[in-house]
Image (cartoon, rainbow, N blue to C red; front, side):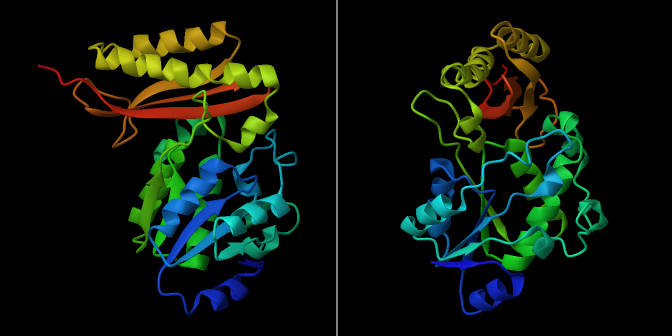
Length: 286
């Protein structure tokens, strides 16, 4: 496995590779990331993983400075997993116009309007930062396949849209959410949770599952189900950003005749913001 820090060195290393799969990450890797690597290995002869904590997607009051950076341990995991190349650029390498203060001097990508909804409503500019760094990385690596997790469903949706709108000849493959034994979605931010909070954190997916169960049993009052779910989490001490039932195809609020649905939730437990979602089929109306 080679660890590469510059764009030119990576491009030189990849010239002779017939088929490349790419997994972008921010490091602090867990089993969920390694599952994406396994998927990538099924689609190509060469796998590239990037590790880059992207400052452009963090808001002023978010956890950029404290985001866990575990490069040595990450590289050990990736080598054991059989990854071919790890790309670890600096901020200036990815953002050449960065002046040391303002990243917005760089050219950025304007994501679709859905980027201002759901997580984007409380994290303005977040998906602009995500779309910009992903487009940069895709241009640098030029993979045939790129693999993203379904845990951040909105992010996956926006990246799929970007690839389509910019006519990129890259297949976007999604990997199912990997969960702890109790159902908690694996996330780098789980490391912020105390022991007691980690036990409580599973209530997010349990609440979403209750929404799914109700819809599949025939309930179609989506606003009422969303409100009930929010109230339930709030009563347990969560600070809820949203619980929302959406069309899995458009990510717009679900309509009565939509069959392919996704229920998404985002909420803070203590100081840690967690997200999750469940994709499912609604019961057909007769």
